Image (cartoon, rainbow, N blue to C red):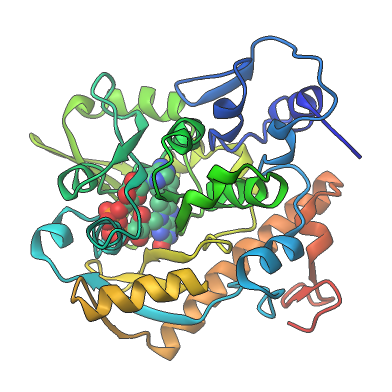
Length: 368
Ligand SMILES: Cc1cc2nc3c(=O)[nH]c(=O)nc-3n(C[C@H](O)[C@H](O)[C@H](O)COP(=O)(O)OP(=O)(O)OC[C@H]3O[C@@H](n4cnc5c(N)ncnc54)[C@H](O)[C@@H]3O)c2cc1C
């Protein structure tokens, strides 16, 4: 059944399920974003729209997306398809220290640019105008990549700039949260514009939640001089620490969690399951990353970066994998419960099921 902007408005925006990924904003002149709030400002009257089809919160055929990206459906309902799970960090000291954790995202993008795998990368950096507000940025060299290092904990509608950068014809990498990766993959599945072939690399970030910019920024402005943020971190899921040039401010994590976007409560994808490479914290060593290499393109780039000594790896301990799986599985179970509480028939419910004990996750028709 075809659906369009009116359906996007009623099923996603009015239902408070917008992920703030930015995809629809870049597709349509009638959809605008301001301070991370997305709104349809005028009706276009279409009954079938790419804004609806590519949205990560509308019905999503995970099996078809798996087949497009990985050549097969997944057999792992918790982490999705992947080839390797390792711990890694950037080998270059400056890249490493600029990074949120191990700096692997920045190191891989810098490597891909250096080797000509891509010519540009769509990244996210704080705006000059409002320091806590992240904006899309196109980086074409090491300096520009490092200017984007570090996690910004709001949605950052980075994909609003995707259509424009695609028009340049440059080979492109995109770094995004799981919802943004899903939106890109839906676009690749349903759209046959030749320029989409220029997306050579999609790096996904692990993400349990993103914050509502307006509420978060208002709270933060009472706590710190937000015009001078250097880095934000959540060590051991404890305090939310904002480091500024003039000192640091600590906000209890439970206070910060009040600002989580409602849309994140129905998202079952923690590890960017459709990315070429997915990267998160390790939760046990602050200066290393967890890296899931998923696709053939991801494997090629990661192996090449390793060979060129752009990144260093070490074994991912078995007991840490068990902890990662438990954390990701727990989030999926929370989402399934939330969706059934809402009586929702949305895609994750069709795809994942809880067993009777409410513990195991099963693929529809699968055995995991
Ligand atoms: C909102 C959010 C929530 C997260 N939650 C978790 C979590 O629960 N568990 C976990 O293990 N990891 C989480 N991460 C990922 C983690 O914070 C790091 O981004 C990841 O480990 C990569 O680290 P790095 O040192 O390689 O990053 P860097 O080398 O510093 O690169 C970071 C990259 O992230 C991009 N970026 C920053 N903020 C955003 C944003 N809001 N949207 C899109 N792109 C962005 C930048 O463009 C930059 O290229 C989250 C990230 C974000 C943005």
